[in-house]
Each structure stands twice: as C-alpha cells, then as structure tokens.
Image (cartoon, rainbow, N blue to C red; front, side, top):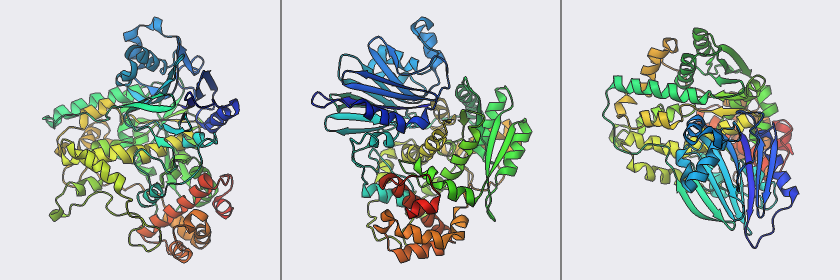
Length: 585
C-alpha cells in the first residue's frame, strides 16, 4: 500500500519545478513512510511513497521496464499466476506491482482485465506524452485527477493535488449538500471544484494534458439469475472464501484483522483459521458510554473458540475530543460516517504490531445484509420504500441552504442498476457503485493509511462476487434475515459465531458524547464559517443542546464533522489541537 501522484504537462504548459513535486510527495508521506521515489521524463513526473508489504527490500518504485515507468498503490493478488504465465525470467523484483506493468506491455490499455486485486496505477512511456491511469473495479483504492492550464495532475488523495498550489482550493455547494444529507458524496466530481475521481474500474488514457479515452471494468458479474441449490451454493461459497482469504493473506510483513461481533468479520476469521498458520491477531473496539453497543463479549467468544490473539481497545469521549480533528484531517474527501472514529483508533493500535489488516467491508453489500434492502424490494402497498429517501436534515428546520438535488447522484446510480438480474441485485448494485467506494472503503483507506497500515477486504473480491451476486434472492434474504447463505456457511464453519442469533447493530455513541458537551460544542459549531453560511446560529445551538433523539444526534454529529472538515480542508486551520481549539481558531 502506497501513495502515488504525478503531473503530465501538455506541449503548451511549463513542467513543474522540483518543489511542487516535493510538496505532493510530502502530502502523501503518511501513505508510504518506508520510502519515496520521483521519476521525471520529459513532460511527465511520477511520484511514489512506499509502505513496504511485498518484497520490502527490492520493491521500490517507480518500476521501470524498457521505456515504460509505473507507480502503483495496492496489491495484485494474482501476481503469482501472472508470473507463472509470463515466466520468472521477465521479472526484476519480487513486487506484486511489477506484474501489472508486464501486462500493460503485453496487452496495452486493456491490461487491467487481467488483474485481480485492489489498485491505483499510473504508467508512462518515455518519448511520448501519454499517461495511463487505472483503478480497481470495486474502488478499494482511491485515485483523483485534475486538468488545469494544460497540465494533468493525479494523486491518491485530493490533498496532494491541492498541495501543488496549481488547483485553487474551493467548495462545491451541491457536493456539500450531498455530504450533509447522505454523509458522503457521489459520482465523479469531488467536493473540491476541478478535482475528480477516477471511477471504480476505469482506465484512462491521457495525452497532451487531456483525457482522450475511458474504459471501464465492472465489479459485478453480468448475466441472469443462476439456478443453483443451497448445497451447491454453499460449496461454491466455501471455495471462494478460501481462495480469496488465502490471496489476501499474502504478505512479507505481519498481518491481523479487525473483529466485531458481526457476521462479516466472523466469516473472515473462520476462513483465516481454516488456512492454518500462527494465531490470528485481532482487534475490537469498545466504547465508554452508558448503554453503548458492546461487541467485545461476542468478539471474545469468537476469538477464544479459535485461539486468536484478541485485544480490546476502549474509546472514551476524552480520546475522541482530543483526536477528532486529526481524524477529520485525514478525510480530505469527506465521509461523515461516525465509524471513522473506531477505525482510526483501531488502526493506530494495530500499527504497533502489524502493517496489514483484513476487514469485513463489503459483506452487507454482496450478501444483502442491510434492512434497507428488504424494504426496497417490497411493493409500496406492503411497506416498501426506496433507499435513502430522506436526508439527515429533512424536517429538522436547522439548515437555511437550499438542499434540493441532494439525492440526484443516488438516483442516477439507481437508474443504472435497473438492468440488474433482480430488484434485490439492483439495490445491491446501487450501494456497490456509490456507498461502498465513497463511504465505507474511503473511510477504511484514509483511517488506516493515516497510520501506515494497509487495509484488505477479502469479501470484496471477483471470486466471491462471481460466487454469490447472481444467486436467487432467497439465498440472500429469507423473511427478515439477510445474508442467508453467508450465515449458513458460518453456521458450519464457526458455530461459536451463532450466525442466526439476533445481533446488536454497530453504533458509535456520538450522540451521548455530544450531549455531554452540547452547550459548548453548539456555540462553536454555530460560529464556524462553513456552518454559518448554511444555518442560523440559534437553530444550531438548540440542536446541540437537545441532541438526544436518534435523528437529532445524527444531525449534530454531521454538523460537527462538517464544521471541523471546513476548518481544516477549506480554511486551512491545522488539525493539531483538540475539537474545541480547532473550532475556535
């Protein structure tokens, strides 16, 4: 796992000086604390900061083969198969990333179809003005671009593009509205004007500072619903999980996992244990708040049943208020998901012992675990309702800004998903297109990479998607029970998980913590420049003073996140104080 960046200048643009490139590298140093590299050829510059996972001694980047140079962020899980097919004599390093460059040299722009993994890749060939950028189909690894004044910039994080000073720092109001109402932003454009995402699965060809061509790979298999009985589906899932987890465990450095009391991480743990090896190192978060959801007992039972080395990290309000600006500071592409809090603290704790973490992201999307899926597939006369039909602030009379259009991005994704095999597969596809890459995976990437930890998601793998996505709806949802097939598999693989027992939903007690400091926080948030543009101070103060109901808590948390994000990423306030100091700055 690494950070990548670069600039390709058109014929009419002046190449950047060394100081600009160094600023980009500096902005990505946290993603790659083990080394850095700068490649300059004519009008092209490729930059890399390295977190050494595979071939720590010999896998430095950029990697150059003949006239081609590449920087990559991620893991190529089928690297052993590519090496076997091409012959080991072709390879100069043990880095898994090198196999991507060999495929590009052989297959050209269609090379990404031969990759299995999570990746953001940039390839340049000396002697021309071409650049190729690729991002993995699920969007596990981020990649951003900007075109300005004949220059084409790219980076793993928007902050590295902004650090050049070539792209003005600003705010898109429609993306801000999405963030406030949805907690994340959708589509190609980011919240920063002029900075766009490379979409999941895209390969771009850039020439003379402009995008000339886009190709795209789908994360999901195409075709009709498969006819398969449950025993056959279970056997296929068993093989897929073993294959995926084995591939995701490939590492030359220590690895562990995040373990909750839920189905997804339990399935990952069960598959890891089946593969053998030393005891699994696992971390679980707990919260110091009255009545807070506590997954530690269930996680401890799972860990004890397989002899895992289990650690519990307790998170209290004093920790949150001290470190929340730093957490928000790593979320330059903003995600107002309160799960950033435990993810950030767990990553910091795990980094003391490992450099790679396996996590269960993607299980709810691929196996249909959300309650909103059950509602969305019901006809209206049976209580059916579309997903995300109501925004966080709808009906609360807090914001003055016009929020119309906040749902346009999700609506566009819903429209594209209508060709899915079933209605349930369609709502899954909507989440996999937007919610997954722009919330869950973005959260995981930023919070782990802030501490130099690589996050891997074995449930988000083409082998697993091929095994389960086109199964009949009844193998995903039965009655009020989602993730049916995964639960059936876990029932056999790890009975201690009790997969059909009622589960407590994962929540972070931000409402309790905010309520305890509501009067103080309300005044500071109401005064913050970004919030003052969209809401009247008395309404904001009242919201924080009475943040007890579920909707009020979510709204107060969202405004707190946005106030901090605006201070740090728009106004440029350093994120090195506590919540109160940063808001007051």
